[in-house]
Length: 185
Image 1 (cartoon, one colour):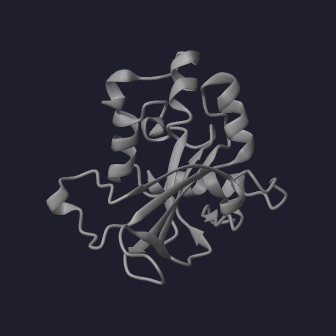
Image 2 (cartoon, one colour):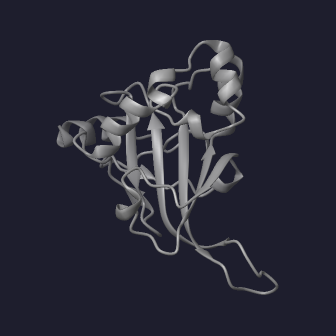
């Protein structure tokens, strides 16, 4: 299955894709979108984990920052659904509590990982996930057996996305009828 997905992505390779659309290498890897911090900021969480707190593994807790391409955001506001070619960036940063004048709470430090979620109708299952680590310039799609596929499809409040953690988009999804209440709980 991974070979088939790689071949499909290789066939999709296009160097002239707009900056907000996914670009793939000839071998089917996603090219790191360098401008993701200019996208629409959706939310930030700290210490979030999908397993038990004992398995969180990050001490001190990490920040998760989520961004989405501007065109996808605008389309979502109109329809409550994510259009084809949507890309989300999950930027994971370390946190610190001691620095400068800060006497309590936590603030963000360096990037520890960058993950990209792509909706592309030409990809089997329409959604793919890519792990860029801290500095990779290209990344292959994670295999369909990776836990992110099952988790997103089961628990995503809108399609394969965790809109339940994007407070400004929850009312949009509910108003447009795309909210999956059972998945968001």
